[in-house]
Image 1 (spheres, rainbow over the protein chains, first blue to last red):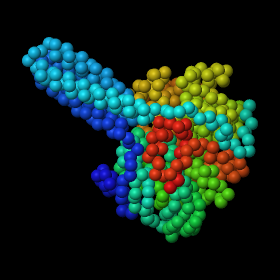
Image 2 (tube, chains in turn purple, red; image 1 turned 45 degrees about the vertical axis):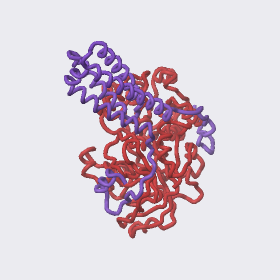
Image 3 (cartoon, chains in turn green, red; image 1 turned 180 degrees about the vertical axis):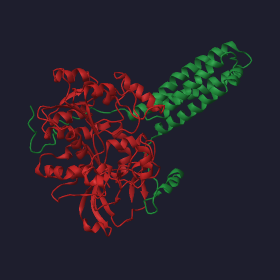
Image 4 (cartoon, rainbow over the protein chains, first blue to last red; image 1 turned 90 degrees about the vertical axis):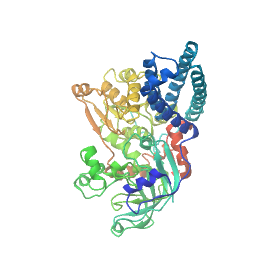
Length: 167
Length: 391
């Protein structure tokens, strides 16, 4: 039984059914991964918004704090998308963002010598997360897409005595 | 017992839970023989209607056999009776119940103070449909406690199967009320948005009530084929302009009566830019519902026409063209279904063979398969229109 369900029992009468044993969830692996990536995106976005100056210094990008902050806003928006009922759009937006991050970091790598180690580490991290985003998007699309050909229900009128006469 | 339990957004599980008990002399316990997943359960699945709590049992379409009866309920029910349970819990005694306004029963919502604050006035208690409507455990379970059971039941004649009777508890009277409150005249053209289970019932109800023409709007081929089976003219909104086609079909006058069997989760498509904006706002919690269908109905409905809304809306909507509706003199009818107001008549029609609601069932599975079927139904996979669960 989950902690939340136990806490919610306080809103129920004493003799109402209580969970004794929990079964398998309707949430599948890709859904859970999308949620994890959604929260990661929001956390990263907040860090980029609030710590733009420090990040700029760490990557040798002084003067581009505005860019880091705008990326923070983008991360939060993508995170909200990934936590929504159609997470594939949020993950797709993250994949686009990953591309922008990689380009920005590569540009920084060309410009700086002092912080090259930091930039290379960040490039590695973004590349790893990008792969995870791509995998998640592919799995989500495959899990939630409509499959097979639509059935024809034209034999189901629901009128055993025949259709009412229209015009 | 086993039950489908809500644990959070898109997280339904088939859990083992303790059995329900009689809590009040008016209660009864039923052994559920059939229950169904309703389109409005998906709003809870998506956590779009507030006040669900982890541990809540889902389900408000169910029927079964009475196995235990409280001392007062014995006046109306006996062990072994086979009953359909309406999704609205009714006392049968308050002023609203006496007027037949069962869905706004004044006594059965045990969380009345909360409902008073949110809705202005309380509505009836509902099974498995958030703590705003009482937080009553639902019927997607092996057993169910039916509060106010002496009034909250529909007895099923032995000659009817579960499949024929089950939908008397919700989607059949909901579709029927949607059509009935249109006051359909023999000259009327009735347009129905959404060919899900309620839309299908509304199509057939409009026909039984004598509409001249029924037009059904959706984009899923299996649903459109089921609408065609009843004799409706169909519009695929991904292929055609709804407004254009409706104007063509009505000599430019617009349909006399419009029914919204879609509600708060209208399809999102770049072809309908307002739906994309609504989706973004919904995601950012700036708007509760996606009212694309309401906007389209107000635009296309014939002046002095009726707009009937059985689709569920949860809260605030943006950019609703009320000025257009006012100037066209439209009448709005809406609400949760007053189930027991219609069931005697509908039961008779089923017995007489005028309608057999079992046509809508596309999937029958075990209760344990419920969590998976929520996903299949939501994703419109396998041509799924209506799922019946057998505990």
